[in-house]
Length: 173
Image (cartoon, rainbow, N blue to C red; front, side):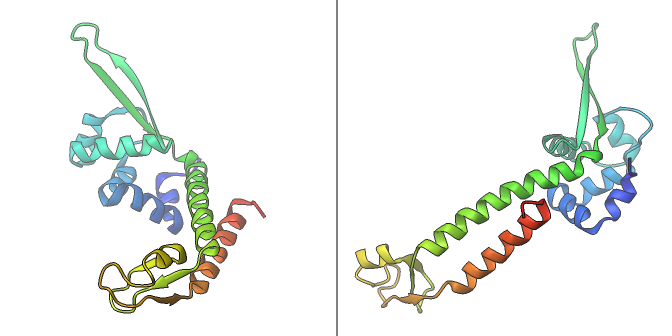
């Protein structure tokens, strides 16, 4: 099991986590004690990070299966306490899952871009499909200028390369 610092030293993982939980979340991971489970209040006190930030970070990490909690009930008061610990060993599974979601979105966009012809307004930049351009008689609905054909080959090629790179990283190739 890698330490929190070793995991954060990986630039790609750091960027992934930073987008997910921000600066305070990264600091929480850096300062998170590994000796036992901690409540969110204890973590806020130990790490000197705002309680709301601690809670938001923990919930976000939990959603990505990078943290887990155990719930205990105080029988006298009925209050529930959540004891947290990080599960950063699941990092690569989390990244892979997110990449699969991104890959599916890119595939849909690629299909849409490659199956349609587009027209663009040189004045306001409005871009529409050929079908919509025909319906509007190739006149921009925003500024009433004439629409011109828009070559999206550059975008289609970029999407294709991005999809191939992600598929390769995920081992789909």
